[in-house]
Image (cartoon, rainbow, N blue to C red):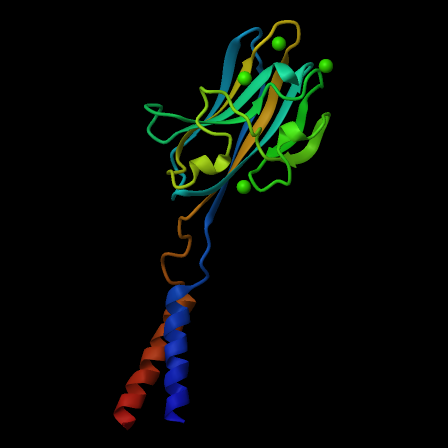
Length: 209
Ligand SMILES: [Ca+2]
Ligand SMILES: [Ca+2]
Ligand SMILES: [Ca+2]
Ligand SMILES: [Ca+2]
């Protein structure tokens, strides 16, 4: 009997302190349109948010791009956690897709079933891994390259159009970020009550012993 009360007290102590463990999730959105510059020029769309907590555990990026020849395009997701002093670049598209039009509502996710350059366009309303070949000026073509970095700072979608004759616009993009930031650092009031009950039960057992 005493043993079962002690077990109950320890369980209360444990659950009152721990609470549900959860990571932080953020969605950052850029609304265009932003013109894509022609013939060997680049343009970029920044989102700055220094309120994000924790280090990155996953990043996905959702894009909506109009273009009449997507094979002109190099597209990168870039991030700076130090106010632009240093940047990391992950390449999403490397002149893939030939003369096809648009990247309409495309989610880039390392966990998607196929690399975008292994799937015949048109591309719309689908998820792909980023291109599995990347230019020398990019650091990687895996979004996992950002894992472990602080999430806060400047996120930027960088668009480079290699050729003249066809162009387009960035309509919008969204960065979905998960971090390891704890969201239940402080015990809830209910948990404190349980904790008090648990300690009371332990004191009772000691006195009885
Ligand atoms: Ca076309
Ligand atoms: Ca390229
Ligand atoms: Ca992912
Ligand atoms: Ca062009």
